[in-house]
View 1 (cartoon, rainbow, N blue to C red):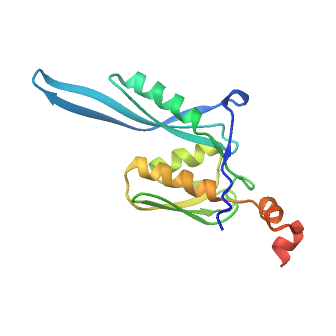
View 2: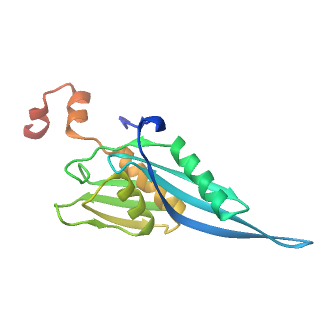
View 3: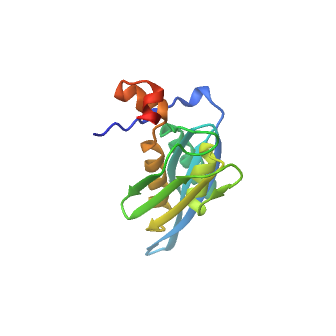
Length: 172
């Protein structure tokens, strides 16, 4: 029963804001000395239900970030929002990273760690309880968070998939 709705979004239609999640300096030792390069994980979103992530690698920090932003714009997905929070509890996983996302009452804020916070705020979620379990590697946490968000379904989508009225979803 894989009814996961991954809705791709075109970048030309929306105004995106980018956030740098993590930047890593990598050294390659050669005969001539150390050669440094940088990798950057970037999250972009319109803060209204659209979010994407990307990885950029380059010899310079600014180039790595620019490449990450371009990659993130190619991987945009639409996530359902319900009054500034998520519609239901969801677990996401990617490799060793596990995340738990729960809806929260108005005024709670984003209770989440670094990499998860960037993804959730870029998606436009203002009230949420989140816990990262397993790997704390920012790559895995970002991908697990996006996995959890893409698994989310709102009540209208559930009613449409089941072929029933919206009231029947809630009242059985």
